[in-house]
Length: 137
Image (cartoon, rainbow, N blue to C red; front, side, top):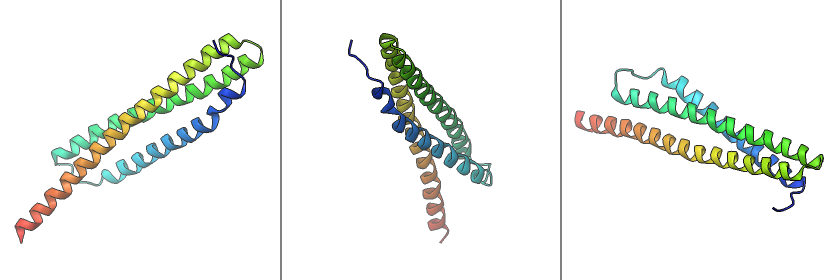
């Protein structure tokens, strides 16, 4: 097994911090969209699809944040272990931290795909309105 220096897990600190900031921005943007969405016409079937979409995205963002925070915490524990001379334990904890971070990123990709689906649903609405407007002329 490779020797792990205390600076190696420290390299993840800025990356994970920026990742958490990005996840928080996604959550806040989604919250804004949901609040604005509550003023929409609730009789349309697409509304139900969007609500399901919102719920999936909220759950994914929560999980993304939880895994990233856990990864961040494990980096701190790893550094503590390395500082105390427990390099083998520190290496294992660092590996687990990387796995959790990778899983958080995979969840992020899934959330982005669901977000794109939401945009497609919105585009369907716009296209339908354009078609109706064209036919009414």
